[in-house]
Amino acid sequence: MDDKQVAQQYRSGEKEHLQNPASDFFLLCDHLKKSFQNNGARIDVLKDANIGIHKGETIAVTGVSGIGKSTFLHIVGTLDRPDSGTIHIQGKDVFRENDVQLAKLRNTKIGFVFQFHHLLQEFSAIENVSIPALINRMDKQEAYALSEKILVRVGLKDRLKHRVNELSGGEQQRVALARSLVLSPLLLLADEPTGNLDKKNSEQVHELLLELNHELSMTMIIVTHNADLANIMSRRITILDGQLVEA
Image 1 (cartoon, rainbow, N blue to C red):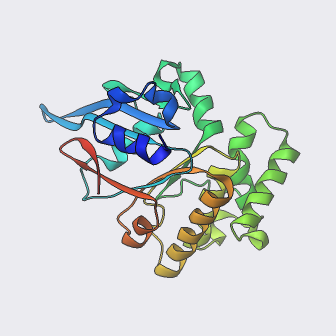
Image 2: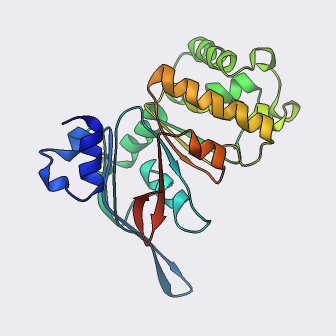
Image 3: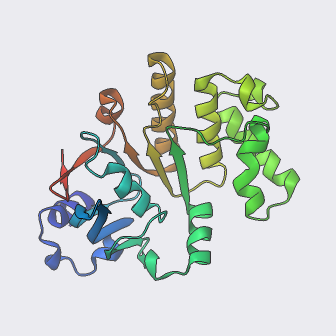
């Protein structure tokens, strides 16, 4: 059975036929549930949600605001925990890890890009990008060398020492993308990565994401309202009545 057949069996609810679903996928979300309280009312965002994703797949998460797209992304990235259910990355049940182990997982294997860059304004581009490497106790010289390499890769060769407030919106988003990639994560999670960019800069980021996926076989899950970005992903999913469904 090839990868496409395995994924189809899982999505169609026939996962009982798979010998070991957690090892068949790079990322497996199984029976995820998540709810919130709002003015005393319970809101169920995810209700027994399931998805299996193979290494190197690119996933667009689409749909109207408020259906739980960002909540799903935060849970996959272990920034939040589900009420119940499991997430396996490379066969490991990540929520069995303690907070220190989860922090290490996020820093070394998962890259995050958000609509708002969360860059340190008083730092230069290369200083911002080197932060994950320095947190990982990498030697400063080595961290800067890696940061320079990825900044060159995203087209910012001449902006390494510019502070954030000296960069355009598109350049700032590229710095944020470089920061997420400096440790070569296995999984890239992006929440509206081109939401604040004009069409030209959006297209450049879209092209860069595809190139990185092809070059590094990096798995990507991207929440977006941008139809152009969604259309170049290998799969599109949405959240319908708390379930993850193919769009």
